[in-house]
Length: 287
Image 1 (cartoon, rainbow, N blue to C red):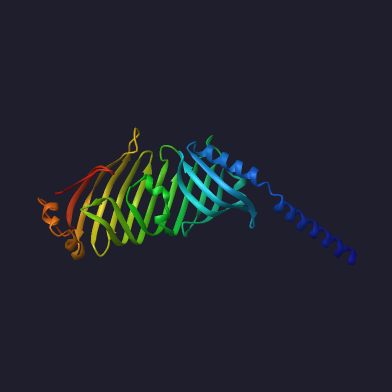
Image 2 (cartoon, rainbow, N blue to C red):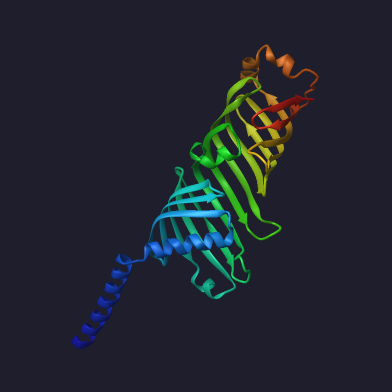
């Protein structure tokens, strides 16, 4: 019996020692290069930088200080990212990975499906966002000149398979503020309670299927698109909707109100409007 126990202890010791040295001697640099190569295979315009990689338990990888770039522009930065595979899916045509990340003061969790049957490893990412601080998102500067703050929650889906490749989102922003640059309706900033939006980013166009703004200053509904010019950094606007200004905003508009709303007729939903031109020089009309 003592001999048997000694053998069991010896096997246990060897396993623990192997795991210990595997953790200490883990080839972090090699794994970082492999992950970066896999990202480029999925999308040549994407690049990832990782400070270090460590194995985790349950089986998986934990990445630290992760930065994702698209054509040289920052998309996302994460303090840490844990990736765990569905072991059985490693032997199937579609590999499934679950992930959990911390960054921008919030959390990002979800699943990645990677098809092994396609040459470029087509991928679908479904993610849930919670408590993201929007003011920390550098990627917003590529879409808008306005500064936005607030708490972001919602879902995102990214697909790389043509012709449906792109990013779609169902998002809600709460307790926030927009600092307009340039000013909008002669106002420098606008506070709001919630902004709910359904978005689609595909190629060089951001489509806003629905955007509803609720706050003490106004209520508004917006839809349309923002197109990114291929020849310059211009963003071309084609937005329309209705706005219902509340008493606090009406007081701020003051003398400008009759001029702004000249020729416009209000209904129960508010004043209809259009925004065209470019992000740097927008044109507003009420009709």
